[in-house]
Amino acid sequence: MKICIIAPTVIPILGRKQEYGGIELVVALAAEELTRRGHDVYLFAPGDSHVSCNLVSITPSAVGQGISFEKEKHFNKIAYEMAVAENPDIIWDNTLAVHAQEMGENHSIFLFKADIAINREEMVNTGDIPVIQTLHGPAKDHIPGLIKTLGEAGQFFVSISHDQAKRFAPYIERGQHLGTVYNAVDTEFYHINPNKKGDFLLWLGRFCMEKGTHIALEVAHKLDMPIKIVGKIAEKHEKDYFEKFIKPNLRSKDEVLGIISSEMKKDLYADAYATLMSNIWPEPFGLVAIESMASGTPVVGPSLGSLTEVVNGSGVLVPVEDLHLNENETYITDAQLKYINRMAEYVPKAKAIPPELPRDRVEKLFSVKHNADGYETSFAKAIYLKKKELKALV
Image (cartoon, rainbow, N blue to C red; front, top):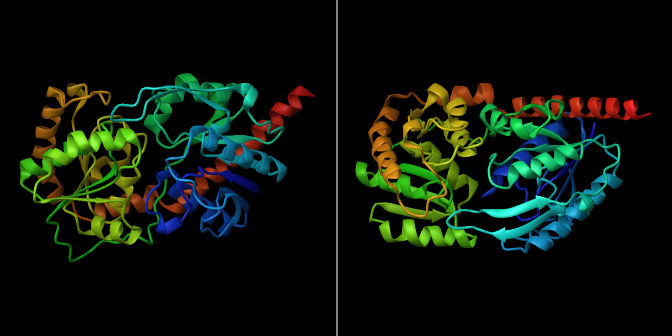
């Protein structure tokens, strides 16, 4: 197959060396494996990306997360137009057609929230080329509306967890959902450390209310354990969140590392006692979880969203259904205080989990091979369905 992959332009695609960027890592691993399998793969991405497939530079280098919405739209439109010009069998978009999105009022407070909609008239005409969108985000706020409009325009969708698929089901026609393809982790890159000290907790992610960094911080304080925090503080709502909920509460045992290299991250995963996923929202997937699991380090997180199916019995799931957590809060609520106490009670259970258990689960479900198998099948389905649709119009 000739496959055109459209990636965001804000961060370069660096594969194993990806310091930050979940979508970027997913795209890199899939693009390289699909190329290895003999597909003709074109990746439309920043020019400073490093991949083994055909790289089509949309910008000389990554434009950064501070770029204006209009400029991001402009570069995405170029990517779409160039992809169409290649006349591929399939276009795999990972941006939800941002070139046709219109930004309304921004309501971001400690997390990103804005009024965004698709303008059908601005969408690049892809003709008879099928387009697949991966649902990287949650079924909340503006995203369901975007998905519904893209579906009305004839695009197809792949979910990244079964929980996420259920949440998006009301907005997608049955024939347009091609299935669930779990995200992958490079199992050759991550390894179990047989000599791990396991004397600290680890948290990685975006600094925002929905990811609940402050929950993990307070859990570490309750247990009197050191915690290493790796996270992105780039956008205004992330900086505001950090200044209010993290910075004033840091203690001597706490270490905020910001964004680090993939090598440093790999070592932290392998050495940690446990990785805390203290999210307040239903996580659509959780790359942090499978990276930690690939290192043999158990995840401690809420029995919420996709974590139940991703972590399953290979980690520690904290029951939270009765707490009615809400990621839109602007202060620490009683429900969050209960969450902190409960997670602190459950963290010690991680000690009983042998490292081979989470590692084995990753190899069986979240390998690059399984991921590429899923996308090959999804691409084939989309091509077949598009041809069937065009034939019916004749």
